[in-house]
Length: 475
Image (cartoon, rainbow, N blue to C red; front, side, top):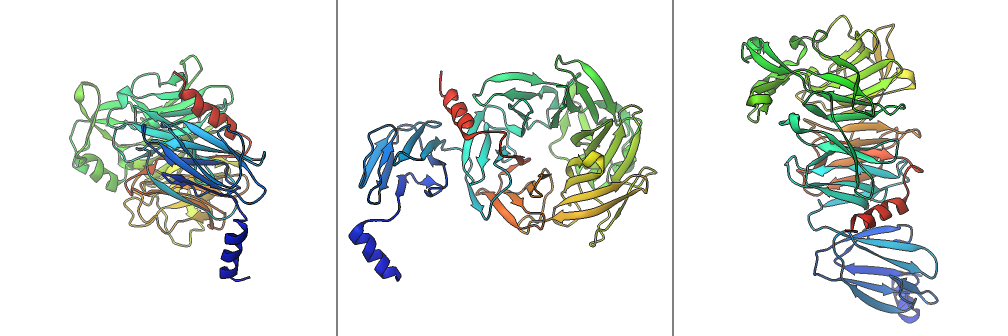
C-alpha cells in the first residue's frame, strides 16, 4: 500500500492510531510508550487538548467518562499543575504545566539509555532564581523545583532525598547545602565547621557522615613571582568529614602538603587578573589558588580534584600524606600517564574525579581548559606501585569543543557514560564506544548544568516524582 492509498484508507475508516495534541504544544509529541509530557503555559491562559481516537478505542480525560471519536477539551492549568488521560481503560498519561521561565531544551533518544533519570541544575551563571530538575530518559522534566537561590550541583542522597547548594563562589561565606524531599520540604542543611563552604561537593558516607570542602583563607602569601601581591590572601582547600550532628570528625588541608608553585601558570593569569574577584571577610580580595571541585572516598583514602592545580590527588586519611598525584606540576608523588595515543600528558582544569574497584580505576571529566583542546571523559587504571596511570577509555562529543569550567563524567554499571559537557549546553549518555543513546541540549547556548547525575532504574519511581510535584502545590 502506497502513501496515497494509506491516506485514503484513514479518511474512509478513520485513523488507526490515537492522536493527542495540545495548544500550547505537547512536549514531546505523543507516543504510546511515553508516559509523561509537559506543556509550557501561563496562569490565565487555557490549554486546549484534542483527541482523535481510532475505531473501538476510547479515552477518559481527567476523570471524565470515556468517549471515542474526535473531540477537544479546554482546561485552565497553572504552572506545576497536571491533568491525565487514560486510553481504553489501559495506560494513563500525565501532562504537567511547565512554567514559562523554565529553560528551553530539546532532547533525542537513540536506543535504550541505561539511566532512568538525569538530575540537572540548568543555569546561565547568573545569580537569579533557577530550577533543579529531573528529566526522564525521553527528555521530559517530570519533577522540578524553583528556588530563590541559584541551584547548583544537585544529587540524590542514599536516603532518597535531593541535596543541592547555590552558585556562590564569589561569596562562599554565606553558602550551604540544602537537603529536600520531593515534596519540596526542607529536611536539613549542611555546612562546614568554619565559614566558607565550598559549593562543589557533598558526599554522604555509609555511616551518615558527609564529606564537604571549604575555602580556608590564609594571609601573607607571596604571589609576586606570578604578578600578584607580595602579601596576598589566598584560598586553600580543606576537606571535612562532618557527622549528622554537624560535628567535625576529620579534616585535611592543602596547606603544608601542596605549595603555591603547584598552581598552573595559566591559572595564575586568570586568578590574578580576575575582573570579578573573590571577597572574603572584611571584603578582602582572595586568590583561589587550589579550587577543590570533587571529593571521593574509597576505604581509608580520599581522592580530590583541584582545578587550579590541574591535578587529582589520593590522600591517606590516617597519615594525611599524599599517596599519589595525577596531572599538574611534577612532584615526587606524580604518576606517569601511559596509553594516551594523543600524547596529552597534562590536564586542564579537570572535574568530577571518581574511583571504582577499590581505587584501582579512576574516572574524570577532563576539560582541556587553557590547553586549546576539546574536553574528554577519561578512565584510568591506577598502578600506584608502578607509579603509572594507564588510560583505558576516553569518550568525546564533537559539538563540545571548549569547556573552560564545570562538567561531569559518570560511568554506570552497564558501561554507559553520562556527561555534562561543562560550560556547554550539552548533556549526553553514551555507550562505552562513544555512541550517543540520549542527548539533551539547552536551546539557549548560555545555559548549562554544572553536573548531570544519572539515576538508575529502581531508585526513583514516576509516581513518587508526580506526588512530590502535586504536594508542592498544596498550601
